[in-house]
Length: 216
Image 1 (cartoon, one colour):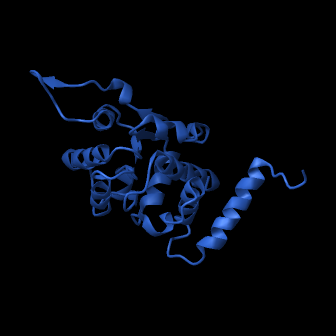
Image 2 (cartoon, helix red, strand yellow; image 1 turned 180 degrees about the vertical axis):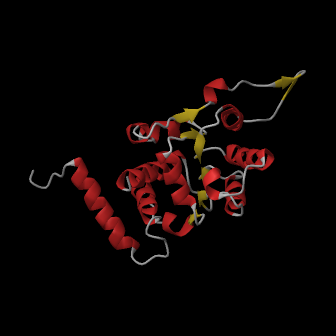
Image 3 (cartoon, helix red, strand yellow; image 1 turned 90 degrees about the vertical axis):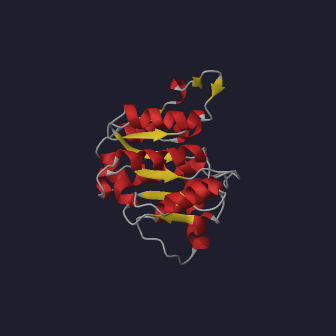
């Protein structure tokens, strides 16, 4: 029984193992906790190879959190995974607009638009306090984010733009959506390739929340 570890001890030991196995890497000190949190969540060291950060991504995310900005997500699983207690400390909320989406029809023809895509559009148009956008499931939602931000013609300085966490998982357009995000001027964190998902998006947000708390 003496070998049984408490939850916090298990986490500390896990991060110790991750640090040892990760070894030398090219991530900045401020990015490394995010990489480790994603690996801890997924037990997948491939994320040390495919995670990409805009040069001001982490700083933009921390700034948004400390300014009480809201976090817009594409699906409920991302919403459920975010530490709302830490976020609430700064006054921000997690926003998911899936419940507001409805099938839109033009005559008898249904418009081909996913609920996540529509929810993101509603969120960006109705909520003026969005500081982070976290996409973990729907490539269509990530494409919509990029399209809308371009259409809004927002000022091109890092701290006036939301941080885009774009890590949709899958085989259809997931790779393409993340490649497009990685080529933009917007502050972003993404995971190139097919891997990603709601747990990864939430892990990135939680790592940013922890960084914000540590740098308070």
